[in-house]
Length: 232
Image 1 (spheres, one colour):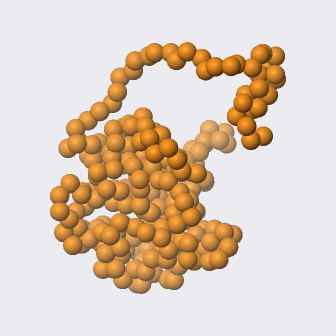
Image 2 (spheres, one colour):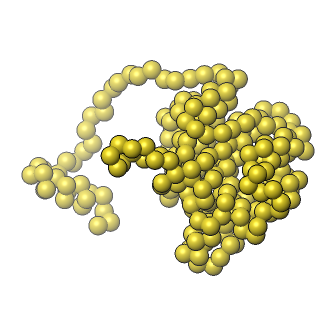
Image 3 (cartoon, one colour):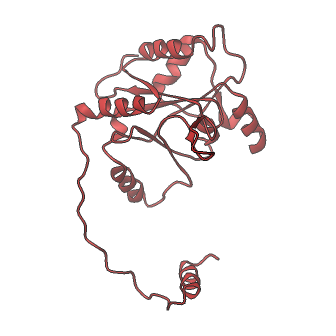
């Protein structure tokens, strides 16, 4: 079924109702809007991200980024990482590219790791770390938001056991409503959006909390302070 009206007509018939010919009258309502100052937004985001089990740091330069990467993943990669141990989006913020270069840790761009989707998924699942950028961050919930496309596969943030996101402070928003408004304003929403709020967790089985079942067991964010000139 490809026509919206046909879909609505089918629903109406299943419910024993006539097919509506116009949209219902909008209901006016007013709710408090969460907002913080630009200065508070980064700290609020980071506090909420860490409260959910994520690790994060505000950085201004590639050297600061490299220091964080060494502290977080130095034991995982005591020597040079094995080939394809770190899979990434095709393009990352320049500060991240420079930080990995300083450490001599090679990044394998996800679109280039294999020819078929199945092979790419398998290699992403075998990687130790997936590295992505981010399109927005939500301060209220400590959420990283990413849009997928052929150069930015979802597998990079879903299949490796560890996910690192690079997020500029200029992309932080107060709440979900602001992000959705910006997406709607583009007129062409992405095929998929990922809202990442801490490590993957589920309590589906007997209400027993399990971490890392449906996604990474560890999540990290480098929050790039781009309010001024970055040190390169």
